[in-house]
Amino acid sequence: MQLQATQVRAARAILEWSQEELADRSGVGVTTIRQIENGYASRRNTTINLRGTFENAGLEFLENEGVRRRTDMFRLLDGTDSCMKLYDEFLHAAHTGVDEILACAPSFHVIAETLGLHEKEGRDRIQTLRNYANIKCLVHEDGLPEEKEPLVAVRYSFGAIVGRAQYYVYGGKFALILPQGGRNYKFIVFNIPVSAQEFREDFQDHWSGKKIKDIVQQLKQAARDGKVSTDDLVRIFGCASAEA
Image 1 (cartoon, helix red, strand yellow):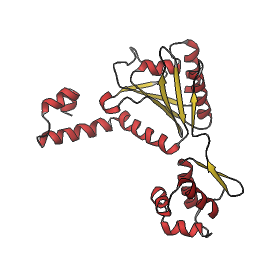
Image 2 (cartoon, helix red, strand yellow):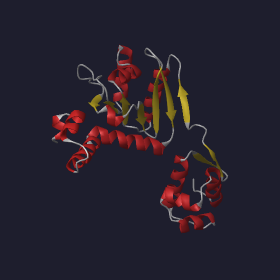
Image 3 (cartoon, rainbow, N blue to C red):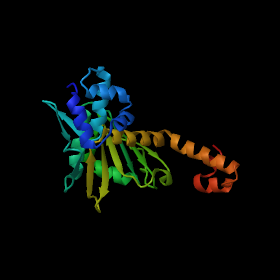
Image 4 (cartoon, rainbow, N blue to C red):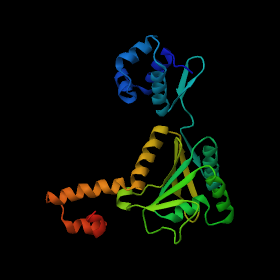
């Protein structure tokens, strides 16, 4: 659906954005935005860019030049079947083209419990999901699986760098993991593509080792500047990392 001038003006009004702020967020020039709002035709890529910027901010566009805030920006998955609800989310996403599911948690047992890897039925479900999407897991405590887990890929990252984040990312959505004690969990699912992309990029930086390499280089420079000692690096990362 082609954006109309009235929709662009209305969208800015709902978000309380000036033309300058929309230009900054979208990368579309202020002059072009003014022309669009005055009814001048624009390139298709320009209107796609503007529409994506508004949708990432939580708006949706309707027929007959309508625009409103989305009502599905977040949902709570809870109850005794919350993990099954999350699995259904993953499977639906995989059926619509999502080929990668990313997980981050303090230890692997959180991921294993939420995916159902402790039970045969759960493993069968994940095996089905694996026909469509790869699952990557980043853990940051002493909680790696004792043996290689064939259904998911697992890597370790320093907890001090990753933080206490617990989440899944899939497509344009991310789900925060809320442990409730035992094997009970709640999940808050956010349908905010721009934030999901930020989670994904941060995950990939940790997964590839880029994040730790950048931090080690910064600390080594700080050591050369006399701000931290080599002993500090060894205590934080171990000899191998300090010498990397």
